[in-house]
Length: 420
Length: 166
Ligand code: SF4
Image 1 (cartoon, rainbow over the protein chains, first blue to last red):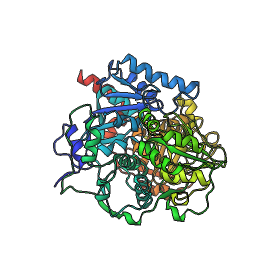
Image 2: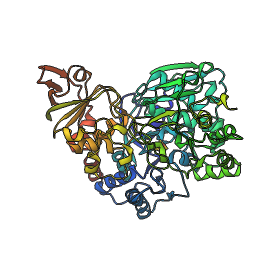
Image 3: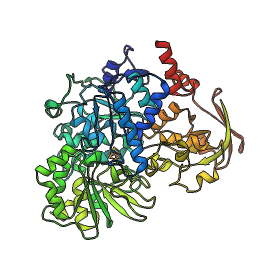
């Protein structure tokens, strides 16, 4: 019986022969990272274990991105802990504010993520990197602290669900809509403990940015990871970036899946996930009248250059409604620079948007766009839990960048068709 | 391990933003995190609960973020264990790693109410509800996970491993 890509990657990283689904194994980690929230706790764990040096100073990085540029004194203290640890351990890479961005956009962009690798991050959206054919798994701080010390992690060999997308995409439908639709079908724990493998003609034709968006949200169905086999699109993206040699890994044709689910994308409209769970997706035509106070375009889900291009296409020669705050967050410094060179920032400013430095900011209700009691936001982020963007009685609706941009213009959740 | 306490009941999909809202994550001080535990669900929870109480919840408890601050807040608040129909993957790992006992039992959720008194015997694999005299079975944990728990969490387990390899 053949193996899935996830099984093969785990097999290649552990010393047990012929692993089976459900086995608990210890696996060697190729790259590990944490941020300004999860990093300090992981460092505390590392210190308790009592080894002096991290397992490999080239294979670990800390990225201050959640409450940075530091929003208050407490956040500054947290960020300082990861910075000092990086210095003391002489880590090869550390990304200070101004040189980095949001971890899940930054690491692939900088060439740290390679096909066939086992990546572990102390952040739930680590599976984003699965778009490059790696197995990227989100863990907590204790797990990460142990990885810092040992370079290993305990894992259960997961089942995989295969998703196949066929047909022709409708206008304004992208990776975000495919994943919101999928989660609305299988539910927020529809893939709990499992890997979601995304495939089919539609995926083969999708850009890498759209693929990152899909894998980013696998966790919103509870998945251990999301993965897409590396093809020419991925290899092209890696060409100028890859920091090392790699061998890409594909699922065997006779691999055993827990389930195979096929969707005809002709049935998929732009999706809007209603409060307060990411699986409450509805087609844009069934949204009805939802007035908003804020629109957020950015995050590790949709803060890449293509997302900004789509937003600019809609905002060009249009004005943000006078009562709406449109906040745009390029996910990394490089994306910010690209957006500037392409003239996108000018479009945003002329339309009446504010442009934030790369940060998680409002995505987790941290800073740079927190909601007041009773306020509503449309957002290209990935979670709409109670209180996620601010007050427990505020509301977040999730969408793609085109819908978020159109809604900023009309002041209510709107299809891009209404404004272009 | 035998745990006894009274139940706080929650529904499905209790997410990590409810367990500990992100706005408090600019600290990793466990006591401070605990003081905001479940705040967006019930502002008074932390005042009303007693040391040793047990959380019983529905499907997918702990979904969302990887923040270990969530099980840490629950543990530090004094909750003795969490029983749910199912757990989100990262929460499950984190709870085991930091030594917060957790058990999967759909029956306990379906046949117990807020305020009932439970006793969990993890060795025998039984949960008793003293308020309605029902008993529920729990599946034994895999050996490897038991060895983490019996070491007192992943840190202690790893310390042993480091010593062994030296
Ligand atoms: S942008 Fe949002 S989802 Fe992504 S890492 Fe930051 S807080 Fe998490």
